Image (cartoon, protein in one colour):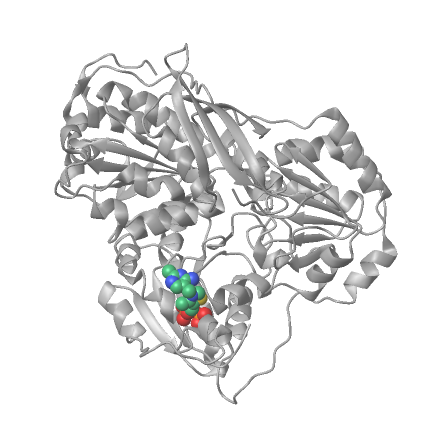
Length: 85
Length: 537
Ligand SMILES: Cc1ncc(C[n+]2csc(CCOP(=O)(O)OP(=O)(O)O)c2C)c(N)n1
């Protein structure tokens, strides 16, 4: 995959409320900023009211930080962490 | 009040919930998929204002909210009713205005079938609202309404949309309004750490050329007085954004005016030459930073209740996520008095805030003089609402703004058509008059239909249409002016048709008297002022 110097793949680990529309909201927030989602993985957790999303994005650390802050601002997002891949 | 346990339909549960949420006024427009709610509105305590277009309804609720600080409420139908709200939602969302917008929807089992007047409300409003809900069960109505008001008014305020299918409006429920609101994942409460407060105080005390850069967040946090106290204590000059206008009295010796491409020289220099910037409730909009992403050598502390505002456009030295009012209160006691005489004299030399202008053509009114005439006729005491364009920038720059929530303008979105309905909303909210709406001849035609409402409700608003015969801001920005065929209606006749008193003035000698008459009319009044079409901001 082609990456510019300062961009790398970050994996965002999100725990979100399992409600309709949450996936669209989160994907929209990332793609709405013009960033491409490389991989997306959504699944249940032991707690049926919570889903887990793993999102890989190619971006700079500054952009990823912004995305994380905006994700945390979402009403249905419980927790977000990220790891550079 | 004891919550009623009675069974009623979803529509009634909605209206009851709005009453419980403290709503007094609902703006909106009916349609087939929201009729059950309208039936219940009829015998509720809520005042319903029938707009003439859903965009007007949202801008009205927005003006109501900006003037009063209370959330505005809108009720519209599905499909076209909802799509007509999009501009209003985007405008409120950008400027952080709390609204709750409720719209009808087709029956649950018809969602997704391209049913008549169906629109994907949650999909369409996602990017222009702070949050949205689709209610699928009438039992969820009271709780959702409570949550919507909480979300709209906490953290960075913004519009929240509730999509309510018509069969859910008709379904029976005994659900009651919650005493407490519990949101699992949304906790916008925030407070500065003692360490951040100490660092901020230390840097402020050490600064040689400090500046406070105040935005709309200061007004939203109700912190204008605290800002003034802080600025006075250490003699710190204050620059505001467009949205921050009103947070600091422009007549104050420390006021440097507005930042940005249409801002003052004093504000520009203050931000450029400062060694310390305390940024309060601003997002470093590109209209101000002109694309600069980092600061050169200057220390910047950014305070905002919204964590995602920090570092968004400019990387700052320190970000503090806190309520601005709380923060200013704790920092004030640690800030030492200072006078910064050299720094202030540099900036003083760049004043006045109100730029001079030269009349371009003999016997033709300059747009600047219209704002000055309004200031004179009202002695600076009015709610000044604007539309978008050159007249907006003249109004922002020249008017003596002294108090918060008295200058109402579409900043982030810059949505033409905002001015007329926003002024109506402010008047309906009971804003202390007079209320003056300054609009361009272009924007006046985008929401002119709402003038009827001003007449019907006998609102004390002076609508001043600055008619320069062109889309002024565009003419000013375009290298080779082209906008196609542009012409205007007769605004005086148009106002008459809507039931307003109206007049036209084109003689500079008569401007003062005409404006004074309009702002003192205490009734809906439209004054068309023919101004020089070649003036630039
Ligand atoms: C809904 C919308 N469409 C287009 C624009 C782009 N725009 C910004 S200012 C302007 C001209 C406004 O003209 P007018 O209302 O006559 O005011 P003036 O600039 O002449 O004071 C236009 C078209 C906008 N801000 N909003």
